[in-house]
Length: 423
Figure 1 (cartoon, rainbow, N blue to C red):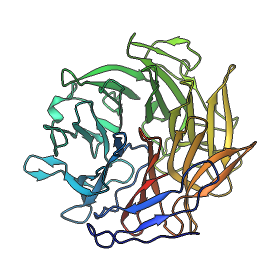
Figure 2 (cartoon, rainbow, N blue to C red):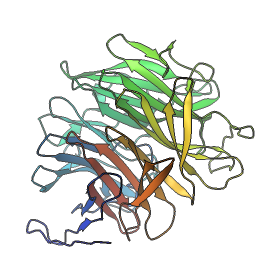
Figure 3 (cartoon, rainbow, N blue to C red):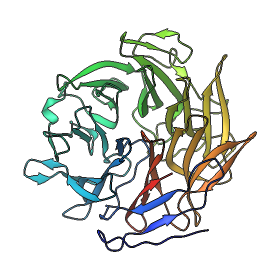
């Protein structure tokens, strides 16, 4: 292990860690400690807290929960790293004060996107609650509360996942809880960057006695949006099932399965494109804690060079007590499922990128000296490489930037530290 420690004049105590090349054709990964305190609530599996921008000079924006004014609360900030590597801390403002909310692990965490005009959009701390939406009024400025701009003020919202389209629009996937008849639906919304307005595209997924859990959104080179979500028994459960995929084409306002078959929305469990089918003993259970048995828990997606979805997800197989890491790719006759890692228990932290020739799957183990890993295909198997030796990473997010580097968002809850990485 080759460790480098540099002290930079612009921030005392900044730790720089360089790792050996990973044996997958990538350059050495580098981690930098973000010079701002995080709150213990800065942890989720579904979130999209990382945004990147720029070619040549690389900018990164890391939305995070900072310590609140009292125990059990947090404030929302964006750690900004500019192209020269200098950090600044941007507050997310609710009027004259920094936005502050009660802690709620797994729910009250921020997601961020930057629109085509350079404005930040942040969705923060929503668990079956009204909109908590913030947007910059000036390019790169501190986001201000714009919750009143969202199109449905009666909606109760959880799990906001947001991404930027090639034309600078934003697309947002949330779970809505306003149907009390036994459904929690998946809703897709769009920010029209030219008009600076939000609108609802459609309720995209809904089934009686089921709740939708948003996972991820990703655009391809054709301008089509790939959508990933899970289902649980109504009203909620930490163990989900029947990981599902949907593609939306903004140019024609149509939805389809991965094989191109058109579908009407909302899709149900009988019409959805099911990536991970139910195992023979797999059942839906409403439970406040993990009921055991096979099921899905957290997933992310990317697209390959042919604009096909590539999915990483955690699935507990029949007869197992731990969640393995799996990858799903779309073949000519259906979904091809592979096991990426199953040697030990993993946490609800996963992500995936596409290098141009292969996927990289990022995951976190539940214990060990090294906990954050990247896996890449090696022959018929997978090679595993440590991302943060000696650092007890518990949560992560990853985004491939315009320069072809994977930018890492790594959370060390035990020591209340956030790391920026470049891989």
